[in-house]
Length: 450
Image (tube, rainbow, N blue to C red; front, side, top):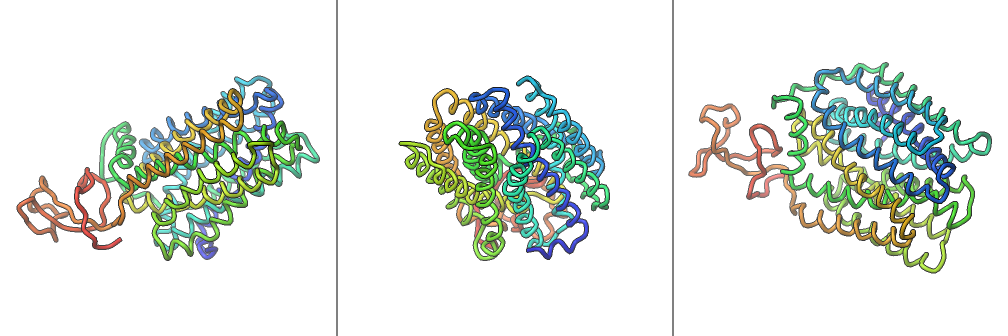
């Protein structure tokens, strides 16, 4: 898997991702402790609201950025967003009111909503081979896992020496290092988009791509299942550890590390698994593991909270979420033309985070108002609904090459060079994606090539 790092541009971009995520991980721990300092046992509600604001920024900003991204060099955009995030992170230690947390979180995550889809859309151009790109996706997932695993561990070590406010300084350093690494790269020029129109139309195209493509609609349902599990971990860990289990601030980091360890283990195994089985065969069964973990944890802790049960459940959540999320880039790359990848990744970023927009505040508000057990069972039900919906939406087999007809193209159109005329129009078969020539998904499919 590591051989993709031989590509210099990808190596620098991957390093930028790692250091930025390391800083983000420090901020995640610090933000939870800051919320606990300000709101006490209401920290779950504060965190749930803050993270909901984060999702609002993601959902609102990402499509807008994708619509105007072709007017701004990708490197310039990513560096500007890194610098913005560094400045905002430096302001967080001076927060004294809950509303100040909300404002700064919105600014920080609006910059992330511009950076992340741009970064994701750049990688397929840097690594065009499918095998290399699959490994890059696992490397990217591994970077997130390293953040989940080592950032809390680093935070725990630092908290033994300094107060949590200094963790925000580490966040800023991570973003500055990311900016420096991106500056050092010469990125490939993006392919010109075939569809034209105003920025609003370009943003709408990515959203329509998800609505029309069955596998991408199923991906959105899977994102909801993952968001339910992730929200339980991210929003409620600090209260579970500090109030229910009466453990130290360092144990908050340890619990989050368990989630990261599970995620990392899955990411390391997935490249070889995906060489043998399809994305669908991996993602759907694992999605059903999420409600099972919710149920097991709820039953195990129904009488009294348990530290081993929490660590076990968080590790299982991490592994299952990673197995669902890692192949996401493969699905998107397979479902969009190269020129449309920025719009596709931006749409996925926005739509997936709309799921978190639901689950983050729900996890916090339920835990505060109805108790942690209620939050666990409700989020588990949401995870089950997401997994069931994905099974119903995602066709089997999910073929890449589809037979289809063109009714409205003129006979001399270049796209019809190898098509044959039938009573239903010109018919041919190729790898099918939604674009200006193929606005709808074919009603029938014939097995040709998966």
